[in-house]
Image 1 (tube, rainbow, N blue to C red):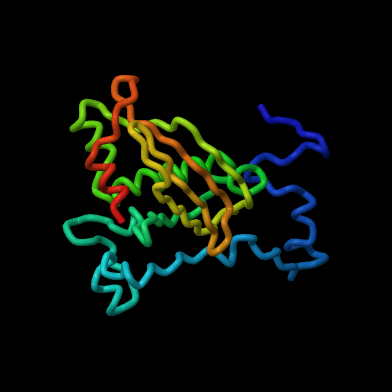
Image 2: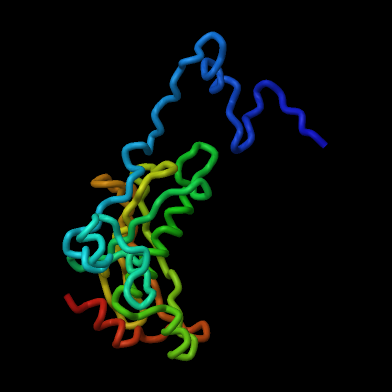
Length: 215
């Protein structure tokens, strides 16, 4: 059954509003150009830092093109890298991350930062899946989050998720995170995560504590 919408009804997601089509490809203005996409200046992937070129393979040093696969079948570029005590994770904004306004939906930033925290642990060689398997079901849960939305990203933007340890306690730790677009900080957050096993708080493993606090 088709849906009848009045003249004042908002277009469905993926449709173009009638007023947006006026003057585009019409007989009155066949050469009218679309306005520039707000993310057009940030669509290209940022170059890797010089100190981390070796992680992308020797081929990049020769041809400027990173290898598709790293040594041993790994994909090091997918996990970001450590720099000055912080973990850096590039993320591209896709259509699924946006809302009807074409800007990134606020909950998408939570997913981006979750990936940043996960990759921070992987970068210090403490994968969450290994902790859960080797330590009788140990897992990390978000206990508290303080977040400030300062700006908005749009589709095709390339963002950088910056994650660094801020405070370490017995059963919890606080991580400071930023979502950046180039030099612009879009979101800041302090996230407290707690180590739990069987629904009860437990001490953070010494191995992870040492890995995150050693400069």
